[in-house]
Image 1 (cartoon, rainbow, N blue to C red):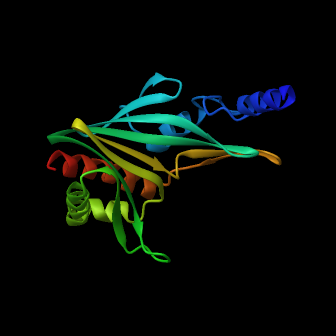
Image 2: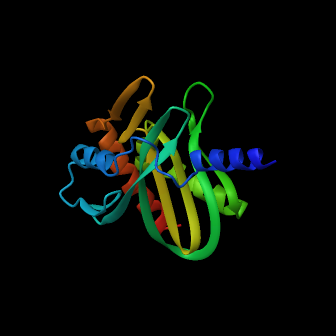
Image 3: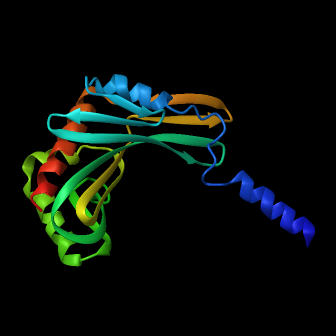
Length: 198
């Protein structure tokens, strides 16, 4: 019985979610992203947290890790906070529709009002500039949350991330191309515009 408890404790320590993966270099991916974005307003708040401005839109960028078996990913998450015109709570995920080809955007309600999810989807589809910016985007996650009087958008883009493998050993930064950068910034500005009117 003691052996099982010790083994369980060792496994827990090995796979702890709050432990940084071996080989993780805090801030390195964020620095690569800073160069890719090329924004004059990039301000570091800590090794893994920065703030940028795109016109009148203020964004936070947070570097986070995701461990897998013999590798880890370093993702950069763009966080946008927008005052809400009405209060409430809700969590929604936005993803591309279509099994083979992208056929539009879908809003999946995780919690909150279903009518608000339908209204959010209608607004995303009605804003042509935002729709055109989101369709070619390769984002890992796009979450939109309403908490009280504030919307919070969290967008994890595939570009601006790093893959670190231990066996075989390699490290690769996935850069943002100029076209991806343009679509990403347009999408974030468009989300600010849509959510401020919702």
